[in-house]
Image 1 (tube, rainbow, N blue to C red):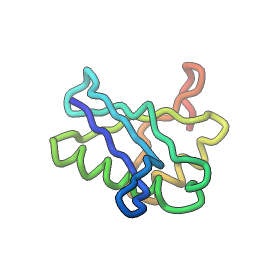
Image 2 (image 1 turned 135 degrees about the vertical axis):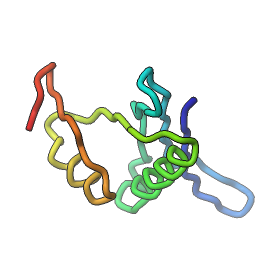
Image 3 (image 1 turned 180 degrees about the vertical axis):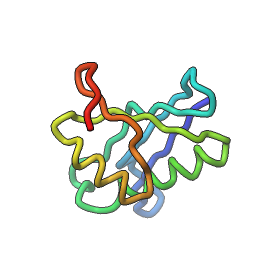
Length: 102
């Protein structure tokens, strides 16, 4: 089981994929691993990633998933906490090179 969310820019009958998030089921019950997500550079200043993450969460919860795991650039962990915290997520663990970070 997994979750895939895409964002599209629609212009008439043409549509263009501008963002994508892919999550896979894990061996841990009712959890999803989010290893892949991104938005085209020209759309990163908007709320595309935020809207996709909210939709990802909505879909994940609707199919019974309760925990999400994601990877982030270690030097930007403070931004990750701010980003996810602003959407109501709580980070339970932060790790870097096999060592737990506060």
